[in-house]
Image 1: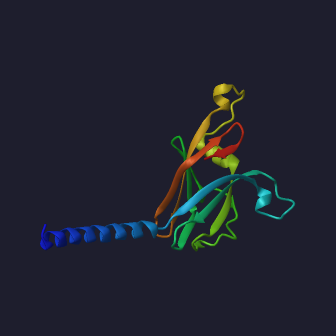
Image 2: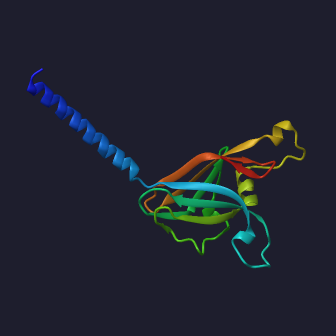
Image 3: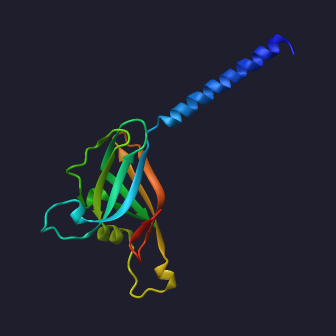
Length: 168
């Protein structure tokens, strides 16, 4: 091997390293939103003693990326088995304190009525539980958009109707 061959090999390796470094930094710097679901109630969102204490789904958005995100929480969509629940047409809690600008590592929460979500998605309690209906899990797909219409979605949740829990 002479010096020309070694120089060409080093040049190609340097190019590959620079391209891979560029790709990795682009992936690390992208905007990412984590979506979490929890069982909750109205009293978690209001101090009003007269409020009817109904079951809610608490939706938590967490910015886990290194860039701030301007989130549009009204664009929230929950899908299950071909049916969809769109937040823009329903009632919700927590929007008065919701700051749409989310700096890195910040979280925001809203509450949506569990009954209206189950009704829109066609999730019904059977009249009598057996082994099959008791163990039935409904796969949920949740998505939300930011101000540039980028979609952040997750498919990691399942709803266990018989015990009323969200399973990841």
